[in-house]
Image 1 (cartoon, rainbow over the protein chains, first blue to last red):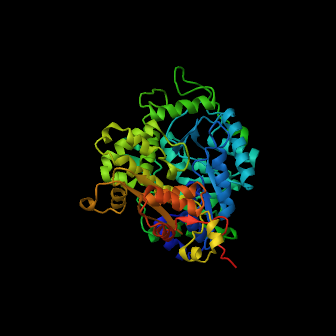
Image 2: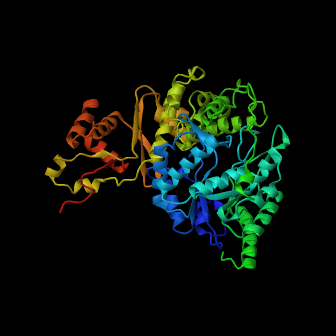
Image 3: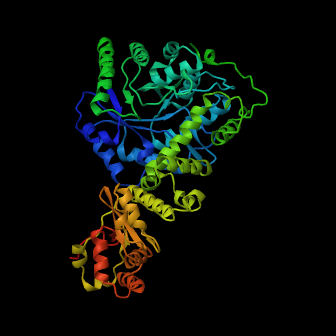
Length: 278
Length: 273
């Protein structure tokens, strides 16, 4: 697996026909947690041709509650049905007191939170019978009460649950600009051995606040700064499956393949240099 | 760098801030309240970036409703729809992580929504948009057809209990041509002049992967209701005759079979030896 694409329904035929080396696809699991019908058929046709990854956006691992049993059961059923190569979720919460919001919300990285998230990741991994990758989210707010920085917290999760990590380079860049930290230094400290997957996406500036607030909008090409950070990262950690995410202003399949090709070139370069199989 | 070096000692708390509490649960309760209530003030909500979360949450829910209720959106226009949807989102936020399933109660909300009072058909059009989603995601099953039915022996026919296909959805509307209004808007057509202003029913079915629909008369609806209750074929036929004494029951059954609306769970569609 080299570089892959977030699968858009309008690109289904092109995705099936695509023969790019190392190509793979990822979908948001929530759009396929259904009893039957065309959505499941679509996944079945794709997975017959390409490796498929399931990316969860609403399990709410950081919610201070056990995981929703019905949601987890549906996810488990889908994992059995499509046998994805990767399963991932976010270091965030989105469900609380029966309400589900379509966002990845922040929280104070406290002992309280660590205990709960460890328990939820344990539950997720034991139910699915596999290791999952946890993604660093984008940050917009300054929150009091952190007892770990994000990398320290992720390392604790890895140590206590055996989970892997999904490193979203655009999220690191957006967060570094919004909260004022050094994105390069963050990437240099990220635990290389745990990275199962990398995400790349485009961002936009906030319409009201401009450059002082970047939005992780997934509706634009990947920014040059993010490509720069990506090159710097894989130079250090080696080749990892890299996903190009695009959810808005979706261009042609070939335009997205162009971004994939840039990532693939980098992955092949570092793999060749280190003798790493790609 | 060791893990202990990663520890950040920043346990300071902002006094008087509603969102900073000592428990994760307390933080999350306050955060959710602030997402839906613009009046909430705290050290988090006063940061301009809090608007990113409010916009993403409300906007994401409204986008989902617009995708899930396309016929309603077309009838009232995007601006009106999104304003009404935002009111619904604040009153009844999603209770499922799958936005595809959001809006289970949207039709009931519209029925009681004062600005929609002059559009008496709108709530039922929303009901049909919702049934489309239900048909789209329902489990797969093999429908029985006329040829299969014709192959049954008389004794088998007498004991036959057909069931609605898991993806079949139907609804009868006593007073208004809801099906015609819905279908023309679902297809983006302008056919309002041709609509006969009387009650009618709708049947949605999914043949393999595509949700299809057709008008359903009251006898067909009664037939399907009886099948859903587990009745024998003859009893379902009786139910159809009960609402429309002069109906051609064979034609009713034939239309339902052609639509792929019926299954036979017990037979697994095996033909008699």
